[in-house]
Image 1 (cartoon, rainbow, N blue to C red):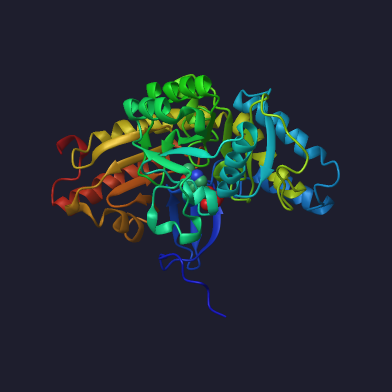
Image 2 (image 1 turned 135 degrees about the vertical axis):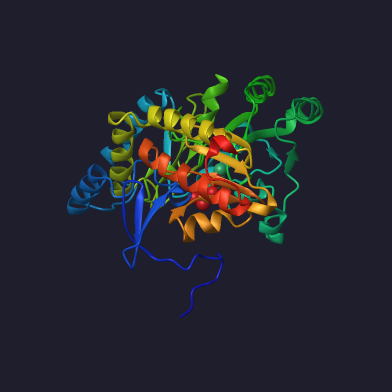
Length: 388
Ligand SMILES: Cc1ncc(COP(=O)(O)O)c(C=O)c1O
């Protein structure tokens, strides 16, 4: 049987990981500045996380949501504390797309409306409604097409206000990434998020903060929307939540009331997933990883900005993007093949950095040295950042 060929892949097979490093089948070591697509939050195979999963595995891995699962409540308590949203309610599921599906569905159940506001360059997943609110027509199959979704320009306050004046009473939800990931690391302005909050309050619209990529402490705050000093009604989360163990969730404001069977899932919230997710939050807390993400991210951004060949360095914490001019188009490939450093990308010309929140300063330096050297080689100039 062949694999269904949906991704272009690097000809590398990773067999081992530890902290911010991974190794291929030949024993070659790579620095992981990509975090397996923003998934590795506390570091590959973190010993505490491994221990907690192993312990749980020996007890019970799965039993259905038809029984009480105390570790779900332990996870909810810890998430409420670390995210600063103690009064919110947790629904557990399995992937980012599923989290967004449930959030959008819940909003519609709540206010009985159908229309959804999304934004240009948004990415929210590949399942039916999640892909319908994703601004990439090539991902939307005919069956996913819907007239219920409108795309407004990201960070355009006038367009948002105008649309609310026109159709505010029909809107069920606004869904927005605090920092667009797939879209190329575009940071929402604080005033834009504050306006969304204000308009949602005025028109009884549910504010959904997609925190699948930009959440879970990656930016230095638990949710990147926190920078604007506003609270969303529903936060969706996935990638960093399990440090590679598939687990996702939505954090729901107390005014949204549950009814039996309005949401549900077979695997969501299983004991093993909860053990992994709980271990992640414990490590984020005990190792002060949000602060590390903030400081190491600020350092990286300041150092990358010194290189004048790289444009528009942006982001927050360890969610960083910069534009690569055409003459440096081989930069990402050379970082991987010559320097053994994984980075992420966003089409057409953005390099994305999404490493573990535990990235050490020495590893940031290792990346910066390789980056400046490779930029110099590709532009045939001296290697030192200061002299560029
Ligand atoms: C912001 C955002 N939302 C949702 C998703 C979908 O998550 P998943 O691939 O787990 O379904 C992604 C994945 O990249 C994402 O970046």
